[in-house]
Length: 384
Ligand SMILES: C[S@@+](CC[C@H](N)C(=O)[O-])C[C@H]1O[C@@H](n2cnc3c(N)ncnc32)[C@H](O)[C@@H]1O
Image 1 (cartoon, rainbow, N blue to C red):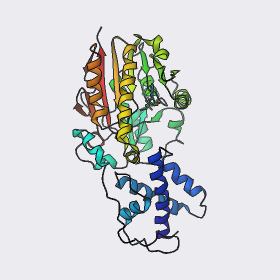
Image 2: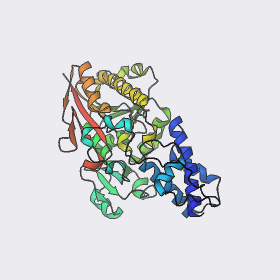
Image 3: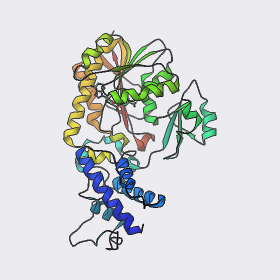
Image 4: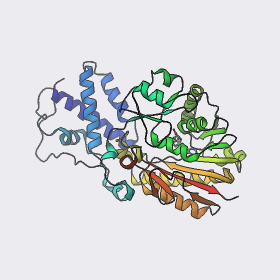
């Protein structure tokens, strides 16, 4: 493919990505794969170059652009819009490039004031691993893998972005799991202990449940979620890690019934709530094109709801940990303030005094300050 043909291919894929972001369709990665499935003439170098164009354009543009042409015009300038065969047509009069920005304009006022400089928000993220504390020796694995030790998590290793690990024996045998250091620190904030009953209420595919099980192998851990498909993904992961975790599928809107047996029973409830994912935009920059004010309103309502579902499950004197991978104040400090105003039997405590920065009644981790994904985490204790 000529350089101009690669630009045209990127334009076509970006048109699909823009439509998909607007209509809540498949992610950009999948759309890139689909595009090349029917275009066998493109060699591996072409595919890589086009893919890089697509993701560079997504990173450059915080606001969802009008179309792929305006996005690529912003990224590469007009020279390759040369009208050559398979290339993009010449730039028309009045046709303007999309405008570069970090985030959509409406989000600006919602960002945590702690965020500070923005570059790190969109830099390519490293691959972080969590070493299973009982199964593996962190230093020895760091040497073997050529990895650095993470700065805050006592189990973390850091590798270059896009490193492949799934074929490595340490991964296949469950000695290491792929997990961002921020997620590891959420588990650290939970401080589970052997003998405790632990509910991971929004367990998804169980990333944090596994971290909790590794920290406290003698704890009873229950992983619940409303999403059957996600919940079913963690069984093989738990087996690989040698962890025993009970799965509990909740049936919305009747989650309360499903949790009734656990009321007052849990020493620890983790609410890793559904959120905008704005803290992971460096991994998933296209998330900026998907979030809308309406969607954010719905998410904060859901966050309040899952916190209210969690509260009665906490035993007297037990802990409730709330986390979102978000850098938006409404999905962090504001949710805890609102929760505490509804539940006077809970008080906040500092879960991670040495990490991140204080944000309301919790802590905020950011890519720029902490080198992790963006996370808000707060720990509350129920009165006895
Ligand atoms: C941020 S994800 C969890 C990620 C997971 N904890 C991990 O570490 O991989 C949020 C999860 O909350 C789940 N969820 C949404 N509404 C819920 C509800 N009402 N009760 C329980 N889980 C819910 C979603 O299905 C999703 O899997």
